[in-house]
Length: 141
Image 1 (cartoon, rainbow, N blue to C red):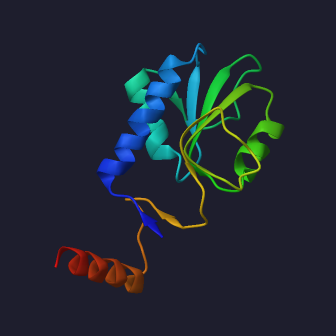
Image 2: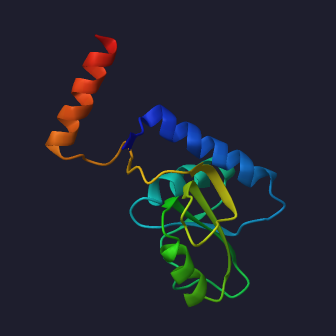
């Protein structure tokens, strides 16, 4: 299990922003995949001054939209969006799992293991919280 704190998480978002800034693409909108993509999409929207939209239903055919998620684990979410709408999509994610069947245009870190990622906004089960706390105490101890 990989547990991210807020500093790590925000650092990954800012790194992703730098990649997007260097891209020659001029995005009309950013869309965050509910739930995990909403926070990074909102931060990227503010940092790059690109409007955030809350639905893809009204996207026009020639709109260039950055679709953001926290992880491309299997790739199925990105594939489904790409096949359902006519807009021009680019995809960005903080983490790309080595086994993902979809490679996004932008990603911050490739994960070469099957370790579960716990983002700072997620609630962990009590037994896992206790295990992590014990590990930290032993490490600092």
